[in-house]
Length: 456
Image (cartoon, rainbow, N blue to C red; front, side):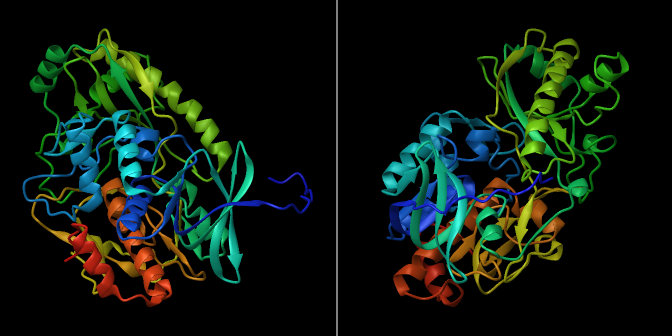
């Protein structure tokens, strides 16, 4: 709601940097894009609003990069897999509870990302918030950022929007759309516990093992599976919260408190607690974000008290930390040159301009399908190209698609695939002097192969 208008006086803004490729946002998509472009031999800068890199991994605390992975899973590998491998090598990852992947340590990954950024030679520009695009007609030629230093301008030959919300594309005039708020995927407040008795907790889990079938029924947890997931083990917790509602500890309206844990350490830390789900939260509305950050922390403390009372091994549990901010799954998306469809992700879509593959993993909008049979789909380069603007690519969860495809492509590991493709494509565009929509896809695919990415 506007209370009126003011006129901001014109001002001069210092140009503080120029580069070949500028990436806005350093989440799994943005970090992969910046690293890939630098490895492809161009001058790269990466803007990040927080003081660490990794986005949802480090800022929100989503540590399960590949919790979908099973023996038959086929993946693109590339930088997304490198995040996991580097974290494991640096002691910042542990085995994940429901897959054959490793769960990243959200704090330790900050150091992993620091090292990868430094090794790449890119210019890291943290503590800067994207404010506006700089335009030359319909071409994005840089951005304005805000920081403690005031407003600054950064110029670039190509820009990659990895904000997660298509902020650059939207403000540059590209065609975008947004799921109605009442239909958006729920936001989450991630948290971690300390003081858990590992032996008692695991004994409790083993005495009453939960499966993906148990996700069904009540609150957030109404899902469609392919059937093969139903009998598989899931680190799902719901019964303590049902009991807490029955006993009046938790209001009956909070029947969405339920979910999964990631890993239980020998130190008594129970990490990657994905229990708090908040509907009707628009991640592009700062008032919504404020309200739901507060509400999410309130619900978290109720959940912890329920775990103390009703979950074996959690009697002495205490909050270790929250993520630095709320986790958003679904907001604005671009209308791309090609928008992904539910059929693409369900039926192994194939594209001549593929920039990577992703396993048949769909998680969201009431669907859960795990990649246990070797099926996968390809991601087309056209999916990164927003309509209506030049010099701009979009990577991460803001790429174009319908709700079912978004339930696949919004996952962090898929964001890394689109990010690496975007970074390489931007570098090839600069080096060849050709517009982003006219680059030779064979050159992009050759560099993808050189960087260890499977795209067929």
